[in-house]
Length: 227
Image 1 (cartoon, rainbow, N blue to C red):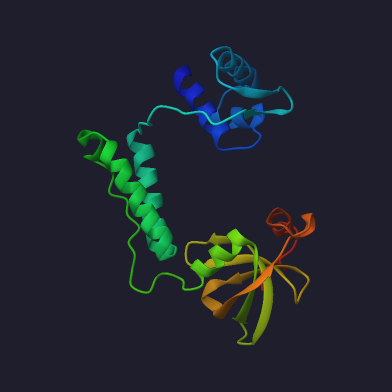
Image 2 (tube, rainbow, N blue to C red):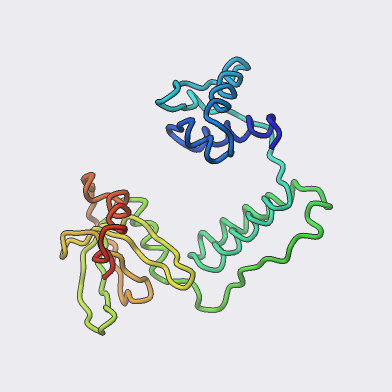
């Protein structure tokens, strides 16, 4: 990677994160931490508003406007495939947003960049969208308690009040990671086993032990996350 490209990538990473360490940047850009320290110093000298220090991390002080992006073929292929997967496997609102984003990208790319692209596609089929996806996504955004009528693999069905924390796609099914009030623990629910869903007019505020981060830590320690 050219140094100019690496400097650009550093700024891009800093724009999208609250605190970024030199080690994290070095791993992503496949260079040494010493190189990152030097690059950050040079960016600061050129006027980029970066705050932080070695061993702690870096942040951008305020919004930084950059010139329009240009993608290489592999980046464009990755974006297009990712957007098609969103169209195929999420809810209609996100699908429309992905299609709009693709249209914006195509509108500013030269014709030769769009030609000869590797034919990678994620086709959508009728009925492929999970009906629970959209209300769960909104409930996660607004931190609303959700009432589920959920059928377990053995056929048993029961009602759960859960705090929705995140949605994960496993290639065939979506799952919801949530704090379950019944189990007083994190649980993961397959969306295709949710028979009814009601978003309650009740907010939740998870403690550190009830967050998505805590749930992901628990995955490696116990299989009880799955319900």
